[in-house]
Length: 509
Image 1 (cartoon, rainbow, N blue to C red):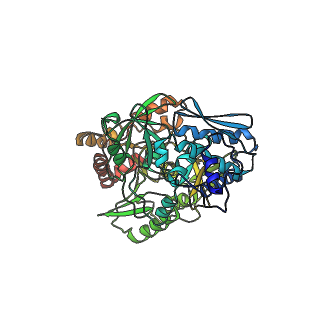
Image 2: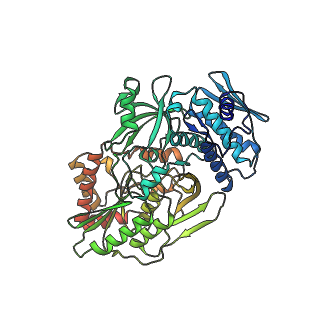
Image 3: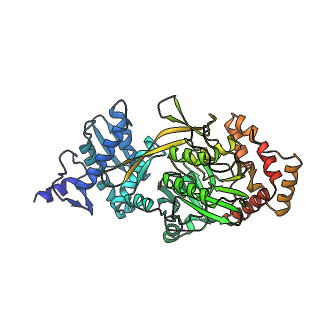
């Protein structure tokens, strides 16, 4: 009888949240374990509080977070008046709840669960979602208010990462909006979609040249939410800026480790997926074992590199450069920069040329690593401009095995340059080479000292609109296979002629 009363209270839209749920009762409502879900959200609020997300402890900070749940669907509105919160669905009051006191995180967890149960009755996609999908969507909405770079990481994704395997998903989820387009509701941190700058509420208008309105739900989900190894082209509308843009997501690959090594005759190619301590060990071992007198060059492929481990990035840079400043890290809320310098000497002979490959999906410390090679004249950056994402995150473990990701640091290059909204510009832009003849002309111009890199303008320019113009002048290569062929041709030409490499190094400011 008690459980029946509990369930009735939960479903009654004007019920107060206080005292609805009990940790010692296994209460299931609409397939949701109420105490378990409430405990999850209580843990999220407590961990955010412990990490100073709401420094003044003001109720309006918590109010903003709870109200952000409304962004799950445009038909939902959440407003707070005094001590009460009202949920509106399609202009009709759907719920009225009393707000708990700040610090009563268990009560806030219960309130959040009550909101979700309320909305599951109205939103079919939320009704079909399991608990992990709900956590992902709701915490994603909350963090979008607090920290657009933050979010929730599935326990399953953590397990996959620990096993050294990243699945071939583009990393997003969404729903059809009322016009029949695909509206993104959440983006997995570090995924292809995240690296391309897609975010919550973006609207996908077309997929691979087809209007989303003319595609079935199954077709859209198969391409955007399923596993894929193909290149995906999207036409995306940002409802905030009202801007429409084209997004190319590089083909996702199955990554068996944080870094891979490929030996191509006399060239060693190192592909870094994540800057971690595991990748440091693999790269150090590879360089020690595979470099010989016949080695003509090393390719460091950072085209999909991400990572928040500044120590790992510093160690990898040190393998090539030794004890030079390679990074500056600034904690959020502080003006003091901590200089990162490798602790050991370089193990790669400075006479061995290095080419660093970059793309728009070179993010965070991947960008800093590319910049370190450029600033220290230790390697040539080839490809397209990096993302310009200078924020670093930390992960906070949650009791359910998942993690909360929040931004807590910013970075600059070892020389103190700010990469925010700028990134790293390549010496050679691969997207400007569209034929073998153009490639041949480019190398003749390099040897004749009639080749302009644009780097001086790039790093001295302060007008953001002009910076963006330079970025647009070196767009992503639309086809992944074409990009690989272009890159391989450029790499072969540079490594086969030391004069070309030396001439390009001297062009770096």
